Length: 290
Image (cartoon, rainbow, N blue to C red; front, side, top):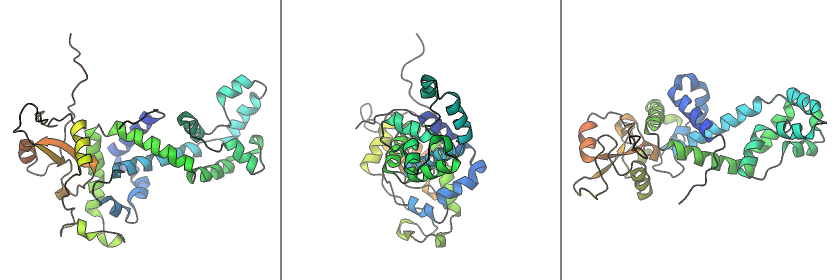
C-alpha cells in the first residue's frame, strides 16, 4: 500500500498539532469541542483504523481552516483587486478573489465551487462582497464532498508524518488519558460498559494484525528502549511485545497511536511500575561519519 503525499500545509499542521499537545493548558477551551458531551466514549472502541489520533488531527485541521477563513479581510482584498484590476498578470499572482481553502483545493486537484461562482449564484460581485459572504461560502464548503476529500488527504498526510514521532504520541496519549481519567461515565449515553474494568480503565485487547505490522515496521523491528533486534533474523529468543505507551492501568487506551514495540525484558522490567515511557531514538538513514 502506498500513500500519495502532496504536502500542502502538511508540516504547518504538524507544527500546530505538536504545539497544542505541548501546551494543552493554553488550548483547553478549544479542545473542549473535541471531547465534550461524552464524545470521549467513542474513543473506547479498540483499534479503529481511523484512529482517535486521526480524529484529533481532523479536529485541528478543521479549526485551522476555520481560523484562516475568519482572518479573510474582504475590504483589504477589494482594495487589492481595484488597485491591480488593469494589470492582469499581477492580479493573477495575488489572487485576492481566491480564499485560503480554495488554494488547498487547487493544490490537491479537487473540484470545488469557487468563491467567485458562489457570489454569482447569490447575485453579487467580488467588488460588493463582504465578510458575511465569506461566512456563507464557508458554510457551504463545510458540507461539501470536496471538503471531505480535502480532509481525508490532509489527515492522511499529517498522520503519516506524525505517527513516526513517538514522543509526540506520548504527549497525545497523556492528554487522552487525562480526559478518560476524569470522565464521568454517567454523562456518556453510548458508553459500552463491556469494554471497561470495574475501576473504569479499559480492558486489554490484543492489537489486530494490521496494527502490529504498522508498529513493527515503524519501529524497524527493534525494541524502542534497548534497541534489541526483534525481527527473528538474528535471535529467535527475542520476543516482540506490543506495549501501551500509556498503560491501560493509567487510563491509556487501545489505539494504534498508543502502541510501541518492546522486547520482553523491557516490557517486564523497564515498565514494571506502569511508567509511561518511550524513546526518541531512531535509526539514521546513513552515518554522517566518513
